[in-house]
Image 1 (cartoon, one colour):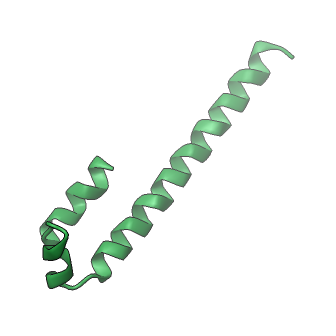
Image 2 (image 1 turned 135 degrees about the vertical axis):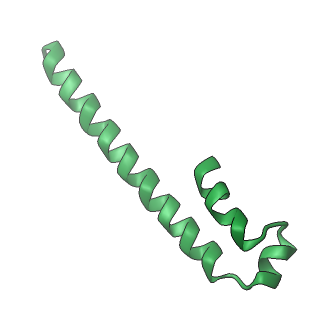
Length: 57
């Protein structure tokens, strides 16, 4: 196989990895967003922390 084939394959793999990461971030945001303020407090978060947690993940 030539180098171009590997570059295309790697680019596709990177695209899939990015897509999977975005799906995980959305799922995490949804799960945290579904928690009550009390539940968030119990795990050391506030509602305003959710975006930061998603970005740092």
